[in-house]
Length: 464
Image (cartoon, rainbow, N blue to C red; front, side, top):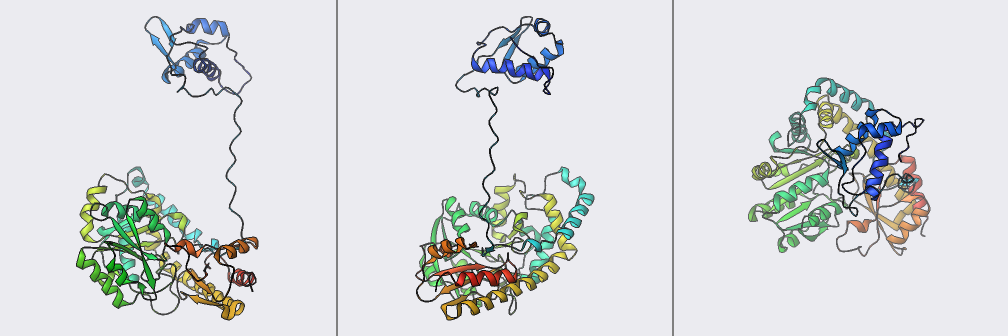
């Protein structure tokens, strides 16, 4: 007996379809049982033949029933253990979204940007212009290495600002550093198996290469950057470095060490991965030229991003491949499509062509320099000789090395959280565990100068 409710908003054929499906799944209608004819069931339910026929057609399309010529419809033989559970029971309550992250009044995470810094109006204008100008292209797949116009704009910008020497054909548009590293890991895993990383250093490259079955070799970092003697003594044939602003210590690798690092790569067929992640944000002195610019034809993979100045949510980054890897890249990825939205790429290209990008960089450099200086003044006023600042003058963070006795990083982070202060653990950057000294990683990009001063003052009162 099937019941159709004419007052229900759901179509009658759908109600009948669900009731028959429920009986098939529960076994109440056994396999190969014959169903009533369309006409007979329509008469029985006092409904139209179209209603019954619609229900049967949907059940047939989904495989719950089958038909025999001139014999009608029959129940399909289903594996009851593999069949989905009945859906006619009381609907489950909708899952609640995950609880939001704890709210902090002072967020010292080193990768935060000021929410008010994104140039929404300019981006929207470029976005809409691209929709009008390039609408036909949005019915096609983009180029595997990314939009040609954007690659040309990046090439010109890198040559002017970072002394990177390359051609647009060497540039690959990526969806963030993680994506860039995944591509490089695939490119290199045929002939390489060991990667040297800075210690302390950024944790993401370690995770990406480890997940791609590379052996990770930590190499100590000093004031001149990665320790070249330790690198030479290792078995590594790939090294990941941040030479212009070492993450997290902020050290700059001098040109003599850069040349020695290039010699290490060329003498053994080794590969350098240069991450120039926040090169635009240098506040004192001249910008540091890229490592790649010293040897454009060397085995150097150059990586850059728009995340540190424009927005991490856009997932827009790029890398410059050495010519020695281009053929293999095209061989491996000739059947791939770009994973970066073409509309976002077109918008970024327009943003750069109109000069908005470089003006935005200048604005962000000025704004973040004020926050950087506010951070240093607050630390000097509140900590005095109880702490030393390391890595000042660039980027979106400094390292605060505490002097004398203190509760240690874990306890300080816990106590800070109680006071609505968020601290990213410095120990997360260390491959071999926390260092002997207590270091605090203090980012300032996501706060105002007033919030920075207040947050540092509260932090200084956590321990005597």
